[in-house]
Image 1 (cartoon, helix red, strand yellow):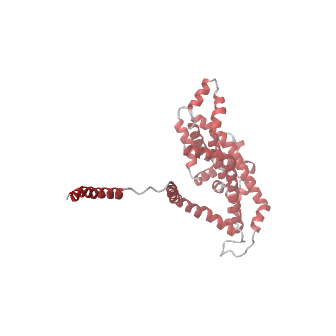
Image 2 (cartoon, one colour; image 1 turned 180 degrees about the vertical axis):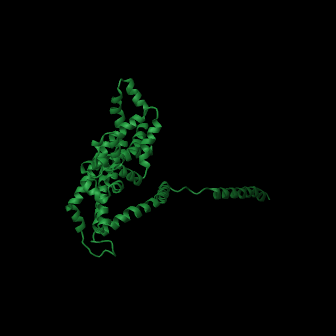
Image 3 (cartoon, rainbow, N blue to C red; image 1 turned 90 degrees about the vertical axis):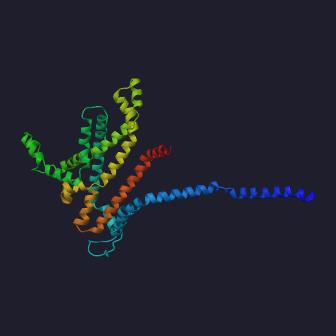
Amino acid sequence: MSNTLGTEPADGHQSQGTPGAGSAATSARPAPPPAATRRRRGRAKLRFEIAVLSGPAILVFLAFVIFPVALAAFYGFYRWHGYGPPTDWVGLNNYKLILTDPAFQQVLWHTGVILVLSLAVQGPLAIGLALLLNQKIRGRSAIRILIFVPYVVSEVIVGTGWSLMLQSSGALNDLLRHLGLGFLQADWLSDPKLAIWTLLGIISWKYIGFAVILMLAGLQSIPEELSEAAQIDGASYWQIQRRITLPLLGPTIRIWAFLSIIGSLQLFDLVYIIWGPYVAGTAGTSTMAIYMVGQGRNAGNYGYGSAIAVVMFLISLVVALLYQRFLLRRDLQGAITEGAS
């Protein structure tokens, strides 16, 4: 009797403890995945997001850049006049001809001259205008608009307008005659001694607005405290610009120069509209792109024109890689480090 009564509490206590232990076991959470697994999942998610965001841009780049270049490289191995599929295989003859073609060497020289003169004229002018417009002067907004408007106007409109004004019987010569400056009248478009300078003036007028906007953005990113501290130390205005402003403006200048170099190597539309493929050659304003179109579409030598296009692409690519390697690398690394921080 006593044994029975004595064992019941123990059994009851034991039966009450068993459900509590079971509920604790079932409510225990699973162990989190190890850190290595979480890192792999994070990297996989990041790669997926990068693929989704960059995929459309990559497809557009492949369709409109890589595929045309590959197709031009294919046609460059043939003597093809545009009728029917290319069948006259010539191998590397078109590319070898480029190396010995005096006309191509001439347009390559013209392109280099335009490139160097554009940098030499637009760079200092853009920096000077940006320094001026960065000051608090009256009409600053209106001046900015007037400088930037030519850049947003279509090349077709700009080229047509300048072509009409600069003809022998155009508005510029008429204006000079009415002002009594008839001795300054000239063949602005057909004289080889003047045509290159005419083109340089048009290019500078058209694209100076873009350079000024870039320089202004760079100037406004420079802390004013640096200039104020230099003024307190007795530095003059020109000393501040030379020792503080220009060095800090260096990354912006290098970016603008890079874009200008690539644009000069591919210059086509303004020259084609103002001079055309034939007059440009005699006036000394023909570029590689003009010569490419002249050989391909106008002369019907699509194989040789395609080879010129490939050479243009390779020249631009090599220039871009070298420029990035030696001039832009430090700026890009600094931008990445600043963005990461």
